[in-house]
Length: 208
Length: 208
Image (cartoon, rainbow over all chains, first blue to last red):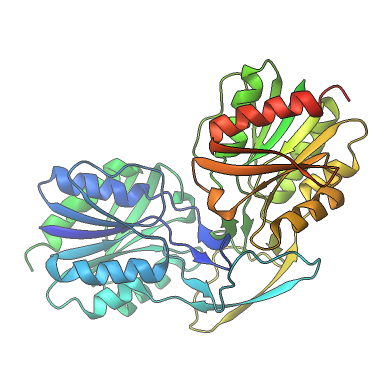
């Protein structure tokens, strides 16, 4: 298979210096890329700013903002068999980005944030006969919200992980498929979880 | 001398996942720590989240938010001879941090940002006979604003660098002292600029 993987955070700038982001390390996505390549697949990895090296043999596309991530994915997706969306996309952007650096005045400032494009939902709506695996990170009503995301993003499966996974080398995940049931759980080092997820994809999503 | 150095960015959280920050790599502060140790000084390095290793022989204090950086510096400063403030402190925080992860609703959200504590200005006001070197990064009226910061933060010298220095391994800096004049300029790799700045401090600020 040729697999599109998104990884890392994206950044949305207030001005030329300050941005909104999150502590996603990219480890889960990079581990999946490594596992997929080891299992004989081709990988196109679209990554926000992280400090880890891509696995050997991986096509890497570096992006910064959510719009950039979407534009790159939209180009690559038609030639892939499926997509795994692990990126912790910055889902709000500042309505009016200021040039330069906003100078401090002592006053409070009010920012209006609007939602960024939903990268995975867009790919889901364009998927045709390709498969889509999403990742969800929820702090409340996690399984309920994961299932909601499964449908709204047109995913074939969604991997639910906890807030504590961000920036950590370990993860505990539950795989939910279109039956709305938890069909697999994996825990341990993200590298091991990645091997298990690639195997699950091969068994359940490949060759559709 | 025993030198307090601040480095890296700080983060200010909207909720448990999303934060406001900047792309400061910490390279300038870590390079200064290395140069200072090589020149025979002791260094206490207070650093926001970065991915580079501290130099051997350096006391490292890791912090995340601006308040944490200030609290750590306030503890260390009385036992130091001076402070070099290279940290790109996140100077706005979200007035009301939400627990968990704010769920997307499709609506715009409005954030009120208020200024964080000015770490270097606070240390400046407590300096007594210790010296204070600040760093300024300005996109407009750079020298004018640098001099304004020199006074408002009670610095003995301020190092002016450009927006392009963020995340880069190179830097071009101008040192402005209380004469309001540019008394030195250095350019090149941050490691070289750091050596020059430590030498400048030894000649002009040490032993006051």
